[in-house]
Length: 244
Image: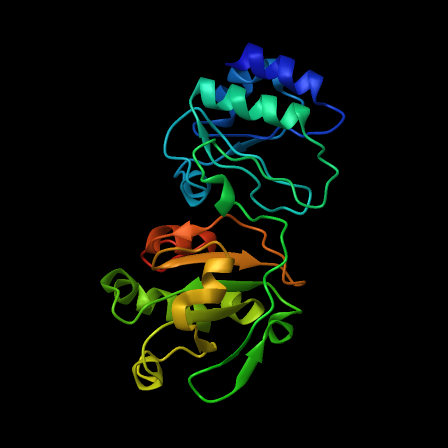
């Protein structure tokens, strides 16, 4: 694909930087990428970076926005990469929030760029929590159920993230059902809100447990809906074994 990539790079040079991630020796990579050698070429021999962003196969491409946020699905294979390039080429990349899907989303669930709905709910300790309480730092809004075995299966991973430096710099809010006593036993340090009928979670676009979405410092949705433990942990930048 390098001849095509060289053309795309030229067409988008005023708006997009191309960075190549490969394995092997620097010498071999200099030869392989000689037609695009003025772009950064990074060596990722153990594929730590590739796997952390979902790059299981080659060739794979990913778009990152000007704030350093992942702003596309992983495009695996030549056709998917070409489609991603076409989307990038026709988009307004100066917009505050830019995101490219792979076409497989339910469109009414893609709420990136929308502000989270207002809410006022009581958490399991009796505190009243509103949307204003989560402003000021990035927050994971999680849709949970005490009766969901998939939720219970990654409970320890989620609590470990809460205690990590990343969890201290971000935040989490849990929307769930069940009794207050059941939730107190879970051991979350983050607010756990009883969202009867999942009214707030549904307005965030979530329809199954576990699922989650990331909100920015202003309460704006900045990610797709992550469904399932692995996808939620990936949204947090956490591998299932607890490494980062």
